[in-house]
Image 1 (cartoon, rainbow, N blue to C red):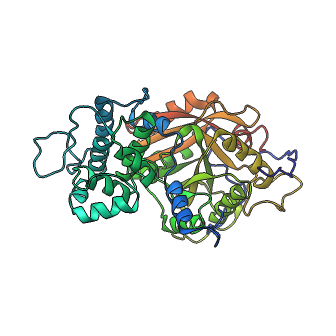
Image 2 (cartoon, rainbow, N blue to C red):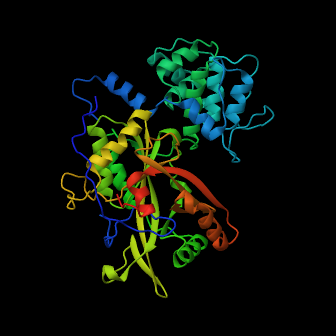
Image 3 (spheres, helix red, strand yellow):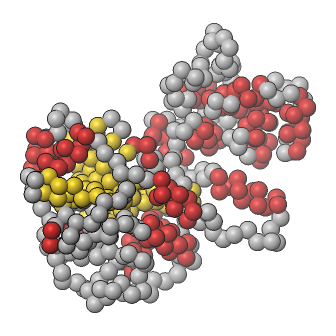
Length: 457
């Protein structure tokens, strides 16, 4: 059970007055120059550890929703037919020249061709080829195949033409040994079995989720650090010019630049995006989730945050690889490496509990300006948001993310619904023909209030 939250929210009165679109929940004081599971017990057997590892490596929850969201694969019937299965595979193999083919006339490469009724072993052979393991399966001599299947208690004839593909599917973890035993029975393939296999194929081909791991993983903190330490300042000449002019003209107070290469590709209805600039805060936020028994998939997406530097903050800091102030006439713009922590929760209940945790342990309030009892580097206006519309009205409110894309980079700036028409029109005059795409998001109230200027908390 989740521990009860002990902290109470305090009423605040300070106010920040932004112009048009907002930046990213930034403090109004000068920014810093440099952003600074339960383990397996000895009593567990090796078999239990292996089982846990397989379960952690693959989460079958919401497979059908994911396939529909990202691949337009809609599995409706309990039993999958050949046409549905083949059409789905075609959407999962990618479009490069080395991708598996669906024609028996293609010589030199394993091909996907299902004759007659779809059964378990036919599905596995097609799945192995679709996951780009076809050539690997053909390297399996009979002895290796027999040994693999025997070790995993799979009952199948040694000379079965599908044996090598079944063994290969186990070794590459497309399926678990338990699932392999079901496929070996060579019966009808169900919707759930198809969804699980399709998701494994998508992952093998680099088309599914792109994430560091689970919040409960023992090594998740090291992975966060390794990812953070690899981030560098991003730049796109077109988008940076648009952003600079937008700030100069008062269209926005700032913007973020992001790269598609780090896109988490999480399931939208269970995902929150949390922006910050200090990696220690992300460590402690993940630890907070663990302490409350909440598990989420974790991805760290880098961004270059650009906003105006006010000379009243003091002398301009010396540039570092992750922080620089650039001057454009009388305009000074901070360029700082920050991150969006993407969290895909296991269920909606955990996703909704996140707001309560942040309010209690990761948000500064009047009367606690020193942030005692809060996570390191907690903000007055933390920023987290989702694209899901059915969020509680007393915790989230609607904003827009105005997105401009140039090849693999994207410009992001938040604005209120009342400002959307003017902001998109003004950005359109600067966009140099690039499309402006407003995306509806729902953010926490502190950041929404920051945008309105009515109450900074």
